Length: 138
Image (cartoon, rainbow, N blue to C red; front, side, top):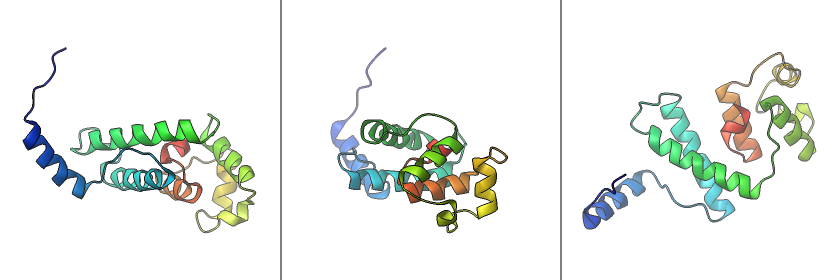
């Protein structure tokens, strides 16, 4: 494997321009984490599952950062998305009805009973509500 040689001055100028548009930064605090989760959600809205999208690599990098922070700072059991949702409800002392602003009660019941999958939009809303990465629900 060869190392790419680059013009550091030019790269610094381009990085400054890029980071003004997309503030990709290391996650060193909960506030940084929340900003990166918000950025990741915006990128998910744009990129979706299109791995050929020009911003797909940025999404992957931000997602890796968020996942790393999650694993170091939040203990969320691995498992099916509905089980993680059930866990988060219990951990936060919430009843199903208290998520009515995120998802309709019948749909939530169907998800928790394994009769319905969590949609991407609902996953994003749940991620915002519980301050976790979207991918835990997908």
